Image 1 (tube, rainbow, N blue to C red):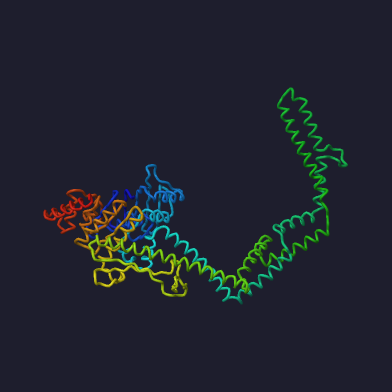
Image 2: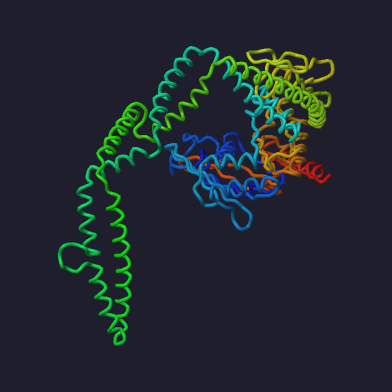
Length: 581
């Protein structure tokens, strides 16, 4: 749950803190006071789009900070995602998050005191908060949103089936597209394949080996300079091991003499013994170098025939590197890629027949899985409609009924026969979903976009949210004036339903209805201050008498009216009894 929200420099809000609690938090205030900025701040905190136009010119940046207490099913998922980004929560089980937007439009995000991508805020938001506003009511009119609502209600097993279908659909369409492309572009593919084969034939004839060009270059350099190398190695060998025509002592003898001389005096001074031991190591190293130089001298051979072979081989390799890559390793990589590309260009009858068989096999599996999806949706549609209808009855729509139609999608470019009916098919299946509202007995059941008024649509949306809350969902729910167009008894019922949601969720409600505000566990008021040169807004918690005055203002616009306050106190008492019951 969100324990605290601080907003600075956003719209009319200069600097304010909202202390939030479990249960139902209600935010009220005069029109234009800045209630919308609270919801905007929440959107920013959880990764929403940054609008520089809402940033106050002074101080030139807007900051939203939130303290989130991780509890329930979402806690482990959020903690894992945060840890993956290198951040961590506090020792008391809370997580500090912040988002800053400048007047230039630059945005920064922090979690646990660490700079993180804004996408991390979005990932956390998906787990812990769901925001519902008047735009969500419009979204509910879209068929894709209605299908998504039904799929979420159907449960985790259904969602696994949907994921499996999407993966199968992708494989089926991938094979179908590959087959169509091979058939449509057979000539172009054949021409490209011929060019690749010519290149592969040339490379195969030369048969280059990895690193061969460098090895040949080094060997050619040795053969070209064999006499100079032999002379240098011979002189060095004589200097180390002797055997030359001069009478001068070799290095090995000199080191041996020095070692023996030092050892003879080591009993007098142990330091000379240490030097003698080091000279012994030097003598051993000289011996090793002497042996290796002898071997090197024996291996040196000025072989003109071998040098000619190397020149010819290097010329053959250069002809490949001029055409295919910068070096031999690159030529080998080109050949490997060409072989893979040849497989992709294959338009032989055998391959086309194989692809067609695979396409039909996957299409059959997709049709079977689409039929299972349809059956699951039909089963869930009845339960979903019944539950939403029950909630509507409690929202002062006792005669209204919701029905959910699951019908085959009209035949389109991609179609399959599902349950004996040819249907258009997409990664979401072969069904169209439509929510219909029967507002009262005798009225036709009409699609929501045709049969629901603004107030009815608000209540349908709330009813659906109540139903979703019974099957899980984010722990914090935000409602931004979803009670628009509602009044009277329906407003009381909306307050009661939101209070019911607040039993198992943290609920934040921005409302203009006193009947809804009366059910709050915590009542926050956004108030404007016009005393200075610039209008600003702040948020304060109201209780008892102040709360009754705020409800009186909402009821009649008269916060000091004794009658209005009496009415507000009666409303608070009714709400308290309802919550207790």
